[in-house]
Length: 328
Ligand code: SF4
Image 1: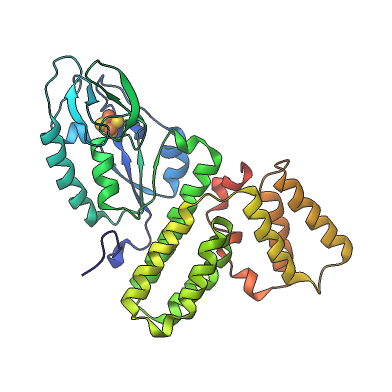
Image 2 (image 1 turned 120 degrees about the horizontal axis):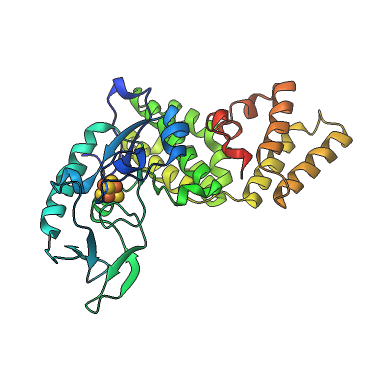
């Protein structure tokens, strides 16, 4: 029996990155007023790399277009889902549909979900919940978003509004690509050597998010011989997703880059070392983006064919064309 949220994957889906998305973000006219909430970056830029699985809870649950708006009312942890003007309570109908839909989504091999912010159905956090006097508090979660996140606790989830922040965007997309590589590993026959290989390539990426997980996971993988394979894989993926969900920062990235410098003690002249240190420091102080020291590091890795570093996913975690490290 697999632990909740642990991934399995059909072989024919390995090459695709499938992400769930609130339908209106793709420009479909499914909103209450017949409009959409098109997000150009998601549709046109990220859309070149991923295959979206659209979900519009309100339309799929049988409410028409246009329709009356809904709002969350009552207890922020367990709110009611009510029409704004006529005050009809549709909580049970929406919850029943949401539970069925998330179970169906298991078949889609999703690697994440992008939710529309502020929606009583799709919002992931800080959705308005109204008290009995009609006063809102931004403490709610949309009913479908909650059902999804409870059903798939390890899957990366974000809102389109938060994805306008370059750091959060880079982090989310990095997690999706890491999860894709992890699922490719899962699709092969389980084997301790393969897990060690995956971990070795991801070590510096993990370090850039969480030095603590870097330590724990290193120890865990080193003890691999004594742990049953299934348990090892399950625990590893929980730690991996936990680690990558912690934000990388200029300080953490600078530490990783300085750690990498240590591999070139013999090759770099003192002037080259000085230059590299200066570039890392300028990045740490946020005068230049991460792409600058990473490009210089890639140059030395290639020039000196450093065997450990050239395998590190950290140096190329997602497609260059997305330009994610040009803005963090
Ligand atoms: S926010 Fe959610 S429920 Fe509302 S239109 Fe978009 S996808 Fe549909």
